[in-house]
Structure formats: C-alpha cells, structure tokens
Image 1: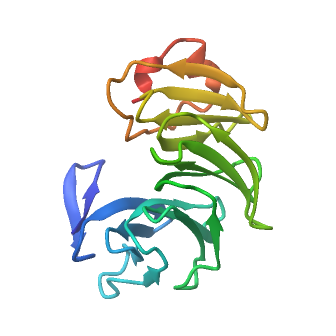
Image 2: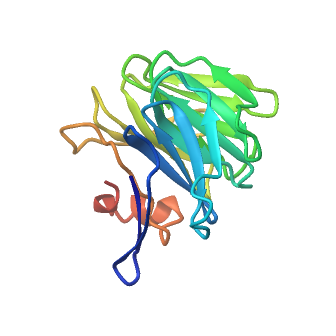
Length: 220
C-alpha cells in the first residue's frame, strides 16, 4: 500500500493499492510518484488523478527493485535492483531503453550529477562495494572505485564537484569524495550499523556549511 500525507497540515491525503508485495523504494518526479517493488515491477502514479490509479508498469528487473532516481530533466529514470543491474527508462515507455551491467551486488544507491546531465553515479552492495560512474549518452562505464564497504546512498553536491556516500558493512561510514579524482575528503564513523537512509537538507547547499562548521548531526 502507498500512503500520501500532507506534511504541512499533518494529515492523511490519499492511499493507493500499489503491489501485492512490499514497496522497497519511492521517488518523486513533479506530480508523479514512482515506486519499485519486490516483484521487480516499477510503477508511476499521478497523484492528481484518482481515476487513473496506475500510469505505468515497467518490467525489467528479475529481482526486487531497491533504487530509483529520476534525472534532473524528469525524462529519464534510473533503477537499480537486487539482480545487480541498472536500467534506464524513458518516461513514456514501459520497457527499459538500456541496461548498465558492471556491479556484482545489489544496486540501491543512484545519483545523477547536477553538473553533467549524462553522468550517473551508482553504488553496489556488500558483494560489490564499488561506486561506478556511467556516461548515459554512450552507456559506457567511465570510472569505478572500490570503497571496501556496502554503498547505501549517493548524493552530489550542487555547488562543488563532490560526491557524498553512506555505507554499510563493514565501515558504516559517511564519506565525501572529490570528482573525478575520487580523493576522500572526509570519513565520518559514528554509526554502529549501516547508514540506510540519508536526507540532504534543502537549506544546506554548500559543503562549507556542514563541513567547516562541523554540523555532522545533520547527516543521518
């Protein structure tokens, strides 16, 4: 089941019967909500229309969909799954336009670069531990780095060519990297278990704010 709440007025708004199995990931794209399920299906819902409960059902992954990310234009969706695959989807189609093969573990972490609309960063699970970079115009792998830990989340800085990653086994760390050299600027090690979720505050857009002032508590 998918539930929608009004965060300003703290009230329930709507619900949709989405899948018969659990919903593992969710992503906004304007008025659309895109979800991925354990059955490998991706669906998008226009929350303005109750009469059209499902606008899309995409079949590509053989196992659970565990990562979703729309590109800045809102026209291309990247999905990652427990089948170790990444698919790129055209917003108008129900089949993937291409697949990116290279990870050896589940792909949960996905991040489109705000500096280059064709650059996609992806992170692999415990069996993989790598952050990989793809040119989605040519579908070519351009770089890969072994982080030695499960990659759970990725987030690009909007002001600097830097990438933030959160990790699980074995480091449970939060790392900041330069791009494209991938020099590690920061490694925060305070969690005892994997950092599964991460939200970048909208008001904090520069590394200086949360790095130099040591506001590490803002990163969870």
